[in-house]
Image 1 (cartoon, one colour):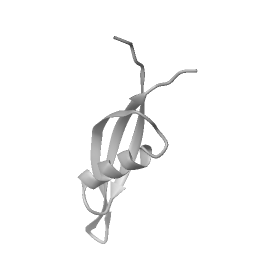
Image 2 (tube, one colour; image 1 turned 180 degrees about the vertical axis):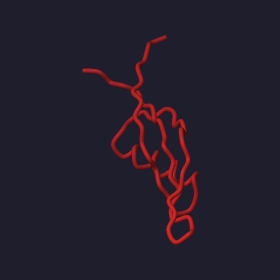
Image 3 (cartoon, helix red, strand yellow; image 1 turned 180 degrees about the horizontal axis):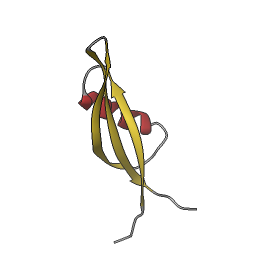
Image 4 (tube, one colour; image 1 turned 90 degrees about the vertical axis):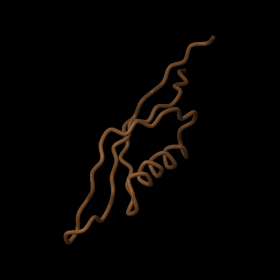
Length: 70
């Protein structure tokens, strides 16, 4: 079995619809520039509020991907 190394970055995903969509947006955007995404760990949920109503759902996500060293 070969050994692997993974890098973890923290992203904040947003959505006007739901926290689930906010996570999906973060993963989809990251997948455009990162390869071998492995795990998305949701760390924190919050919302932005405008005029007494929820304007956006936000999630802080740790995202891991396979590290390809030089």
